[in-house]
Structure formats: structure tokens, C-alpha cells
Length: 235
Image (cartoon, rainbow, N blue to C red; front, top):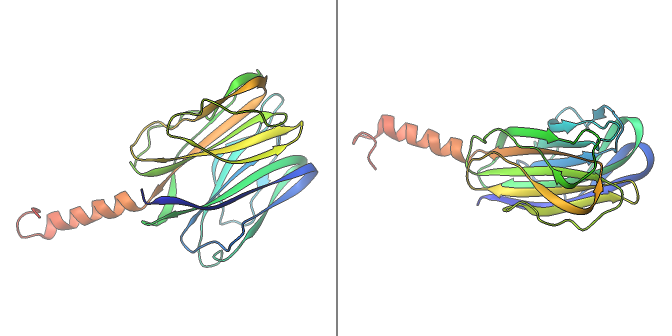
């Protein structure tokens, strides 16, 4: 696989606030992909990223009995290369959980968002926290990221969907817990992730899939060969 996890971190605004800052240890690298997961409890808010270069990948707003869950992303350009810290703003004072991960692909990233989904259970408490299921992805090698949120303090999380890994967890005691999970996929499919907790809680989830430039480069190469090779495309 050409997609690798570079560095990660998480932070919280554990008291009511309209901003939260998340920081990485090292300056981010030109061309890499940053993926942020964010939760602000059960309040409906609007979210303002650090600047207009950030894009939304999936968004589930908070509501009575529904935990908010969102994913944002940025392909690091020259203006952002070397940065280590980003501040996010919400329109209503909230207790905010946030994670950030830097991802590298040897093929590079360009317009990476492929598919997304959100999921909740309309105020019903549950022990299975699920991201929702995306439409079928369009590329075999992709990065799949889920933001899975449940109420109250962190619990033991088990029975994670096969192929997925636990990433950063951002938790605010007795309020809500957000877990980032990820899967570097090797085949197309309908992406979905869930895990189980021991005590039923109000929850919410979302998922976004990101394609690198690998398949596009290969496809263009073979189109070139078919059109230019004297043996009619036989190599």
C-alpha cells in the first residue's frame, strides 16, 4: 500500500467554548492529506474551519439525542506546508472534541474526496456505534476514515469492523467520546465501520473515503500506450 499514517494528535475544549485548537508535533509536508474529525455534543452549530482551503467530507449536526460527528480535510499546499496548529470555531459554545491525522500517499492526493455517509439512531440509545454506509467507492486503493461518537466517558470499544483500525480518541469526561477509525482499503466497496460499547449511549457517526492519484496515473499511462505503441498496445 502506498498510503501511510504520518502523525496524529487530539485535543478537547472540556469547558464550553467556541474555539478549539489542535496541534501536531512536526510541520506538515507539502502534498500530504490532513484529516480532521470533530464533535461538539448534541447541539446544532455551524462550523468554521481555520481557513477556506479546508473542505467538509461528512457532516452530522448535533440535535437532541444525536451526537454530532464531522470530517474535514485539506491537501497541504505551499501556503500550509510546515504548519503545526489549526483553530476551529463553532457558532454556539460547546464542549468540543477534535483529532487530526496527516496522511502520505506515494502517488499524491488531488481532489481526494470520493464517498461519504452519516448515521444516527434518532435519539435511541445503542451499544453499536456505526458510521453509516457509503455508496460503492470508485477506486481500489483508498483511505477510509470514520468518526464514531457516543455520550459520556470513554468505554471499552470492541468488535471493530474487520479491516479497520482504532486511531485517535478524544474524550470529555461524563460528556462525550469521539473515536477516529481508519482503513487503507485495497478494493472498491461500500465503506462502513462500527464497534460495540458495553453501556447504551446516544451516538452519531460519519465516514468519508479519500482516493489518491494512483489509479488515475495508471489509467492515463495505459491509454497513452494503447494510442502510441507500434504493436497496438502490447508491451
